[in-house]
Image 1 (cartoon, rainbow, N blue to C red):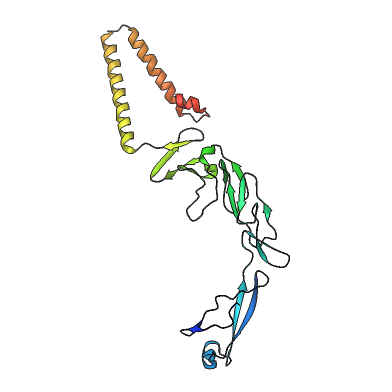
Image 2: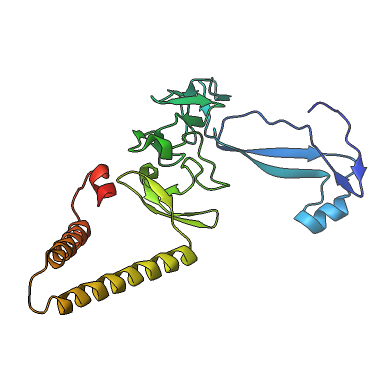
Length: 246
């Protein structure tokens, strides 16, 4: 305690500069004596006619980012070292693909992913762009994934900033088109199918039972589109180039 005298304000004493030193995660009993303490008030509050007040103080344990020394002190880990457990006896060397600072901050390199602040396992992402790295900020959500990516290894596509994202290739996500664009595209495809069907029917009627070369080509084209549609619907491990072609 730096100051030897504490004055009351509205009947209250504020001991703001009191520092207790003791073994972490232990209890200690403090005795406060003062001639300014009214024994009658003390009797009403504690049932004792005395000018002494006893306070039970709890000394915290060493927090994440600290280590307990041999003389029972909590000391902050140096840069390059870390501790993520309460009451850790020592600081550990920073894991690979990360930088450690302030005792508990494990700053993951870009292109790598860490599950939580209590995990020391760091994984390489399938898509380096999707993993921003950095320190996990629980207050603002998991910000180690690029916008539109989520989940383990930032490999899933999700909802971010009012926009839905979907799978574009094996390891990349892209913005979903808005509803108006999807409706217009669906209407255009439907119109093209109707026009194509109408032309095919007209050619068959005009052929009068014969076999025109144009009809043969259109039937081949129809079969080709049907095969492409079926091939794309199967859950096969197509390469990204083949998916773009389909």
